Length: 341
Image 1 (spheres, rainbow, N blue to C red):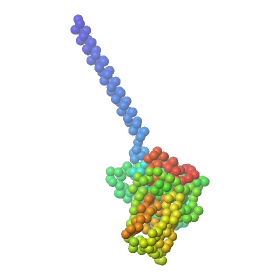
Image 2: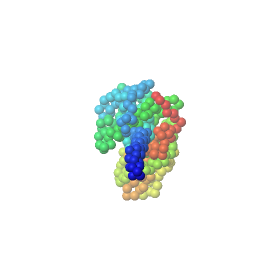
Image 3: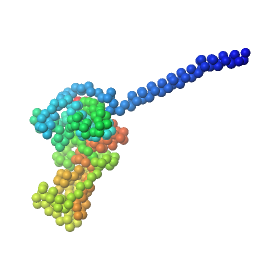
Image 4: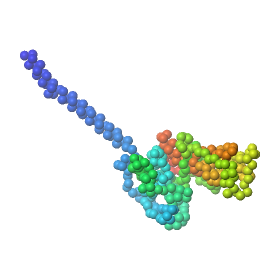
């Protein structure tokens, strides 16, 4: 009798209890899979195709812009944000933080609108050109993709599109008007007031601000070296009466610095020059430099660009510190608002 009871108990265990445990484990396992999927949905990378919103934004004006291609002297009409894909991908590295790319998108859109309103006849029938020395750099999608590694092309392009589209319609204003949104590569730790670069009265929203973390970028420092003969020759191209005695102790002497720490005035031989002039004449990356005289004349340069407005590496550094795109913009442009245009 005892054996019969034991067999019945074993049969019950096999039939009901063991399947119950397996079912419980399976349900718990499925719940874990569902939670993981939901977590990934919340943390999608911006290069995910499903996150790229391509719905056109209806601007008050200039939904379509006329772009002058300077090499061919032809004009192309493009939707504003599609034009910005080419600008942002030409102006900022795709591996920068997404908040830096979004800040660049807003800055580039603002710069475009400002240029259109301020220079309506500069390029004839065109609104803006693709020359970075005049307006903003721009590149076609095909050329941009060709310059990236093949395995990064799709993700890089989608990241650029995401940055532009996430900021649709947003521009920067000061006292209700679009600002002249200057930007540059690397400030060397401090931006510059435009009056110390181009003269004039400047803009109240463009002031010297400090930015930490830029020294970690390749654009932060550079050197340029010239033979004494080459150095003299380059300056004589601008000033034919230039002369210098390298045996004199103070043949090159810094006289004054700008608020951003760049050279404002420097005495070189028989001429006093601005730092901006020296940068232009010698092809330096910045007007923030020091000079060493030996058998050759060596310049140690900090930063890259004119230093006015948003520093691109500074924007990336701030983004990595947790700043969002609007925080970044308001760091570099003082007293501004970000509005939908």
